[in-house]
Amino acid sequence: MHNYIWASLWVSFGGMLWGVDTGIIGPVTAMPGFADTFGSFSPTIHGLIVSSILLPAAFTSFFAGHLADKVGRLNAISIGAAIFAVGASLEAGALSLAMFIPGRALAGVGEGFFLSTVVVYICEICPPERRGPVASLVQLLTTLGIPSGFFICYGSVNIKSSYSWRLPFILQAVFATALACTAPFLPPSPRWLVDRGRTSQIGRAMERLQLDLQQFQEELESAGPATGDTNEPPARQSYQRLLWVFRADNRRQAFLGMFLMGAMQFSGIDAVLYYAPTVFREAGLSSTQSSFLASGITGIIIFISTIPASFLSDKWGRRTSSLWGAVTMAFCMLLIGSLYASGSVHENQGAARWIVIVTIYLFTISYSITWSIGFKLYVSEIQPPQTRAAASSLSQSANWVANCIVALVTPIFLDYSSFGAYYLFGFSIVLTGLVCLMYMPESRGKSLQTIHREFDESLHVKVIRALGRGWSEGRSQRGRVEVKEPKRMESMESSMSDLSKPEKAKEPSP
Image (cartoon, rainbow, N blue to C red; front, side, top):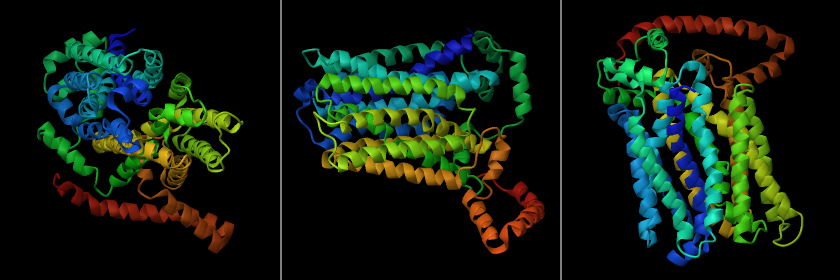
């Protein structure tokens, strides 16, 4: 196996750190030992404990690109992992919530730095023909970390001391320290070396990664000059590209990407993962170990479902999988909410509680094979080349902000109403499905330039226009109008192109 795969695999364990944290925080806060240390707390405080890692991660991920450009991809990963290790150590040694919550927030700061940079490093060191499968290692190890976290807690809950909940954070700190210490010794990104003008080090880096130097040079030549003013310093270029995201020809894709990444969390997936013991306990699994075991099975299902979804993501369309995912997930959430609202779910009897448990598993499978993979690919694909990094960073930040909101309000909803949270997530999925139907053009099998042109006119405008022609002129006339319409549009586009060429040449950099 080539060295670039080993390097990618090692830094991908940063994703596993994120997955383990997702897997342990719900069970840890449900452990009797955690309550013995910190006392009982309200649902609002419970939500604050869980979500305190997310807003710092969202904030720092926004600036992770600047750090990675300045000090290098691997050094940025190392710095982020070191900060995460300090935060996890504070969590493990906390004597009060006033120490635990800041430790968790500090871990989020580190997480925002290294998790955003890992994928960038992998994409830059992998040859094009291997980039997709290798880059999916991050998501794969993230989903592996979720059941790992659940089962770590399943084993440690029997420890008759506060180490029952401290041990998972100790393990996190140890592994994050190992990543921080070893990342700088991996081969640097050749593309980063080119950007920094360190051409003398490129040959050595390519040799260590076992990559073809000639192929790399051909890729650089075929890519052409970088977009924007190459005489500007990297920080200035990053700032310019951030402003370009909100230009009229780019903001539609950026806003759609931010919406879709936020909608992933409002589907309720992380509510199920963060509060799985509580969810399963309400469904009738009253013992702590039983609810932890059911939570671990949820993580295993997600991991197993992600494997084929990663390899088959190019076999079905992004839009098609998004719509099918919306239908199945909305059905699951609304079914669970209806069962609770009707009073059919009883703790020790009846089939309804088992229907709830099975439906939760079906929901996680549907999410893992549709939205989990498809949305992340789509959000990157639809962005214009000059704004792809900045727009993707904004989308990731939107994902974490939405994740924070969900983590904060879910325990409050569950305490106030057994069915309210499920209805909220169900109707959020319905809304997202409608947005996908109206505004989401298909991207599978299309060039990036073609995808960009798809956003010149919103899909819902095309649909309404087609329906209007059919209503007023009949099927035969509609066919003739559809033949003429492209000619008229082509003439208009040609005229506008002629007018806009001089203007584009004079357009100053933001």
